[in-house]
Amino acid sequence: MKQELADRNLIVSDEAAAFFSAWAIDEERHTDGFIRIIELVANGSEKDLRERLAARPHDFGPIVEHLKDEFSLMVMIAFDEMCTCRAYAAEKPFYDSLGNNTLHHWLREVIADEAVHSMNAVNVIRARYRDRIGQVHSILDNLIRATESLRYSGAFVLDYFGAVYSTELLADSRLMTMRNIARPFTV
Ligand SMILES: [Fe+2]
Image 1 (cartoon, rainbow, N blue to C red):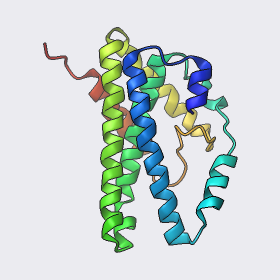
Image 2: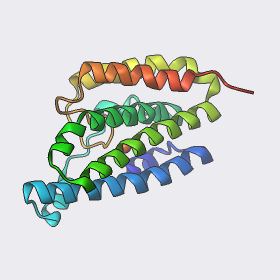
Image 3: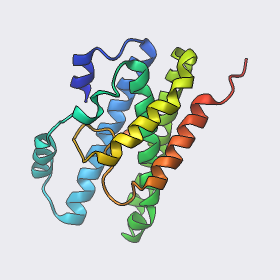
Image 4: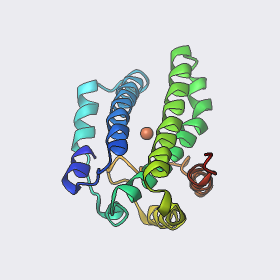
């Protein structure tokens, strides 16, 4: 993902650059945590899991047309993080059923991080692209349409596989993201 963004020269503003460095650190921490959980629950080895992660195909094909510029990228990320936040929230009962207090708190931290990521992306959009806020809804509509035919492509975003990523979850996340972006500016 990082490499793809660099190759495409998609990051132009300081705000977006700051967003991405903080975001990458959090997501790496989340990946480490998930690997540890899979090790505990499914008895997989870390090396094996990391190798499988690295071997995933990175096909940006389906989302490339939505990565036109920094603005469309930030809209996609604001939406994506809102979706993952809600998807993890939907998985709370599963994690709680494992009966581990650390896991319980860890999942809640991940959920809070995802919500913060979405809001940070929203704030970059509001700070830099106020004049383009009217385009957000059509970008999100196109993204949701693309996910209908999309299978997991290893692009790290729009990773919507599994039952929790329902049509309803996508629609709710779209609405929440649009509300957050379009909320009135206070002077
Ligand atoms: Fe995330």
